[in-house]
Image (cartoon, rainbow, N blue to C red; front, side):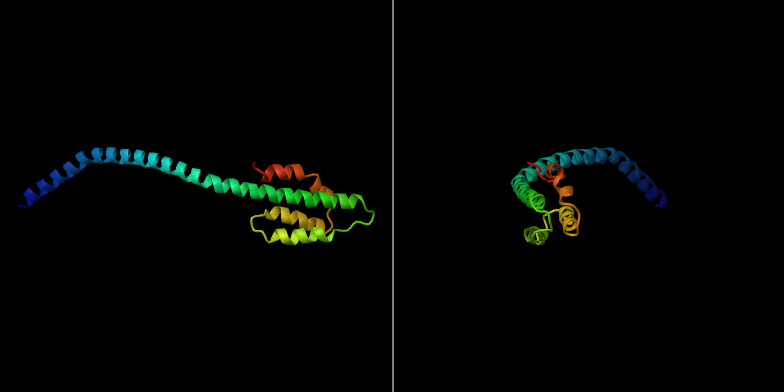
Length: 137
């Protein structure tokens, strides 16, 4: 009886080993189909997000344009007066823009440096680089 069970267990092991290549092939086919399905749905998600991403980029572009305008207005103000100090408009812009989480913190820090005495020219001369970094349109 024990020998018969041992024989059946060996037979079971052989059947499992014979089955493994079939299972591996099925798993391989499954992985290929999943990859194709993922590509299809990733593309659909990307298409669905396009409008939102485009709108987000337009908002960022508007924010950077406003940032550039405030910097250049401040720069002109400094050039037109011998007794320059940061204008209230500049400070108001800094306070208002910092409330917008979407606005780059790095640029808020640049505004803070100007308020703390750094030269407005340092930011004005970097505007083209700033615009190319944040405006993707």
